[in-house]
Length: 127
Image (cartoon, rainbow, N blue to C red; front, side, top):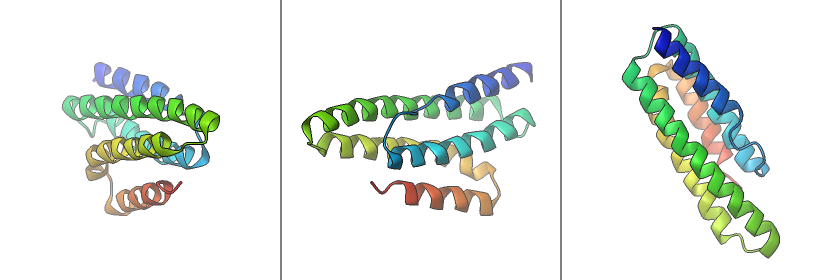
């Protein structure tokens, strides 16, 4: 149980620093992901997840953060060149990583909460 709490606290700390400097659309995706991660952390701390689920969530969140890093670099290049092709592709990768993370988290939530997060993420995908 103590290991699970430690995992949850580390994940929360990491989550709060993810993708803070991207454009509004990306920040919106980040806000939705942060909300989902808070929901997962509450479930984990309450003992309503398993070590396997916690490990999968952390790994999926790591992939999400990595895609945010790529998107941030693409944003910088876009600002310098005006060519948005790589940035749009990077945002799509961020969205796909968020979808993968939510595929793990949302089955543990109430249907209403899961639907809200999915709808918010869908809205956030627009540039």
